[in-house]
Image (cartoon, rainbow, N blue to C red; front, top):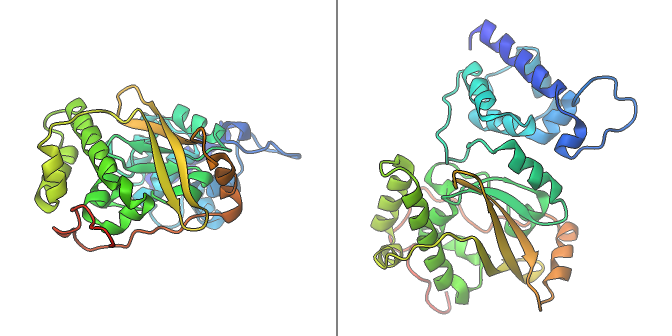
Length: 301
């Protein structure tokens, strides 16, 4: 990366850091705060980076930041869409297309997510790519934000990787599949007809999953605006929750949060999430989807 660009990247990061108040990102102001905005170690913490690495970035030194790190910094610093794109260009990285795992999350949606500290919540795209989760969401459904490429979509993994389905009881798999396909059809219709991301996803699923192909042929369409589902937690057991959605203006992102289902013991079970900690991901990495992964599981599997 050119030295001039790298120096500008450091200057830009520092200017964005200094304009943010700790309360804006859910941090306590604390005593003896001698500088405006956030401290360097606070930005590093929010972005999941080491303090030394972030210090090097602000000094205009160190290695070129990855696309994932740029996305994390943009979220930590509550950058606007234009600011996020500028940061990518300063780092000599391609600006990611909207809808992928590195999609820009609107600062207002991040603010809302930060205020849901006692409720599992996450921001996902219309193709069910998880962009960011709060700690309770990670504890409930596992860290879903680390997948890349086609596997970043939970819907893609649902129809191609059987282990993904362990998140829900087997009796619910058929209804979940139908809801995912109807939601995907609604998302595809909202996007441009030539959108390469959704087009590629649908073609792949039609090719590798007979179950998806059969459901797609039904032409059911419905956005998942609210839902009631059962989630299998390896320590706590089955938790029945209401899933509520707040959509962005263009419909491509949604803030999803989970509340206890009325008439169940889920309120107490959700309270335990903060005690048991992060759920381990039940999905296993695969090199390529298989044709048998998309079928409905048989009893006893």
